[in-house]
Length: 117
Image 1: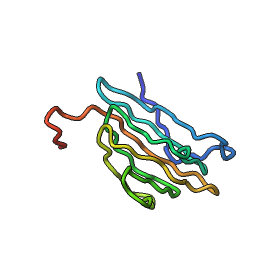
Image 2: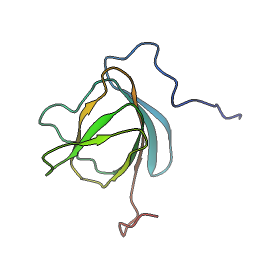
Image 3: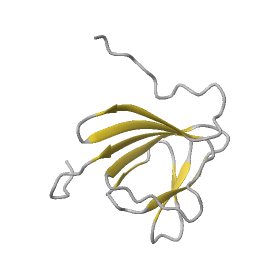
């Protein structure tokens, strides 16, 4: 089988109304996805509380990410990455509404002792 080549920066033909989630591939204990945001944010009062850890990097656009207990969100620019532990409550406060914000997310099971490589 010959591998397919794709480009993470290929824009959508029109800005989507809803956020797009595209699973790129998965392994036994991880999943890699491309997320395209165009002005979306986490609903007011909602927090993500995931059973797995997530490493995410913003590739294009802009976003604001906030963790529970913080009074203000953290602005993100392309290249900013964060490793979010399992059950670390967080939310996306904002994404750019005039262009695509492309994320690369790796959802994974952390090693047993909690250390990262």
